Length: 192
Image (cartoon, rainbow, N blue to C red):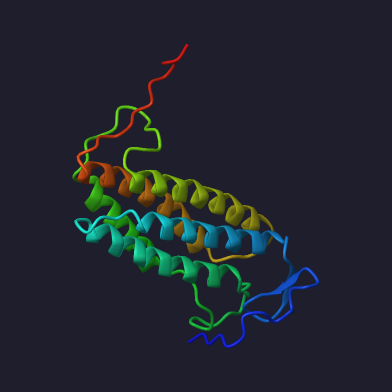
């Protein structure tokens, strides 16, 4: 369990931060950027949750679980993976978390009409906020895959963040559907 008694430590005043294993990196390191963007996605999901009506508790439950998972992902990314790491010695994303996202995607998608066009972010406030979270998640994915090019990371972290952006896309559509609002469809060349 984490216990924070003092919020500022002055340890980062010289432009470095501590990782989960106690090592230190510059705050602009790609590893720090990757888990920082995961934190940004988590915050965007928190804002989206403010738009959930009382009639949509399933969305709130899913997004609450995802926010917790994103802290797990941040912990995974901020703790360098070693070749001889013992299972369970560091908090890592596991397959069960990805499987849950896939089940939820399938469940939500089963009630939606197939898409014949790309959709524009919008519709309800909840859907719009979820699209913002989705695009931040895609940026986190790009940063995590960049990190993976130079360092060993948990490959399930990439799978999780990839699946999460799909999940946010589908739940945004489901939020519009639940509110009686259809998808906002892209009309190619509409304003020529």
